[in-house]
Image (tube, rainbow, N blue to C red; front, top):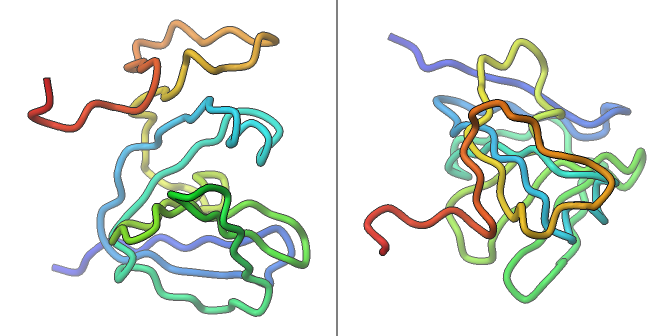
Length: 139
């Protein structure tokens, strides 16, 4: 049985990629950095970095947005594409950069304590966390 492959890329096509296998549920981040980067909350999914294959990366650039993380974007069209914690084996990708249908669902809203004052969160039954999600087994 072959694993599912999803594809995606930026608005202009200067960055294209494929992801082999399962991806985590989409996380909606309301932190200030994501809101500044995206103009609103950001929607990310993710997978192990080794499951990504770049088909085109001439436009790919990285910006170190904090001591902990960096963000990948297209230097030609400005599309926000990736987020990764320094040293992590997981690469997060903006859900909107994936070609549809994605087959994914929203798993949680993160950093809700920092959301913009100009919008309300929907009453959609999706988990909400004032900061980041607690790690399994943490109390």
